[in-house]
Amino acid sequence: MLALLRPALVSVGLFTLLLGLAYPLAITGAARLMPYQADGSVVRSGGRVVGSELIGQAFAQPQYLHGRPSAAGADGYDASASSGSNLGPLNPDLARRVAEAAAAQRAETGAAVIPADAVTTSASGLDPHISPAYAELQAPRIAAARGVAPEAVRAVIARHVEGRTLGFIGQPRVNVLMTNLALDAAFGGRQPPPR
Image (cartoon, rainbow, N blue to C red):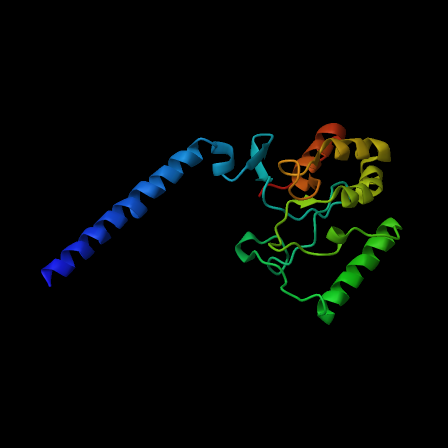
């Protein structure tokens, strides 16, 4: 019996040290090599935290870019309730929600073609990015609210288009928070609310 118990106890001790102590310390040490990312990519403006580059937030004011619709939580963008709607493509609730959102976008912008990310939620409900097409669609509203030419708003948006990751992964995208901060810097205005 002791011959079987000893290797089991040694294995438990060894794996406890390896996976319970050495591995977490190594990962924490590696994370300290990238402190900005390890601390949540927190964005500060005027000395205060206004959000994270990695987590979307709701912007409803007309002078700001609006993010994707969010199904995370009752009011959207609730990081503690991160999830998509899990509605399938043939679900009538999803079809109704997308049709209503598309009609609202058409009424606001007059556009015949609405980008998909303007009317659909992301898998997490916390996507901080939108497509350049959706950002461009919002430029006239932002320009009118800020009292500037739409071309000036489009120029700020164009400077904030991020390319594909590693040159081939994903699609070009615009970070909503970072672009909104750039819009405030370029044209003045209130800062995004602290998060």
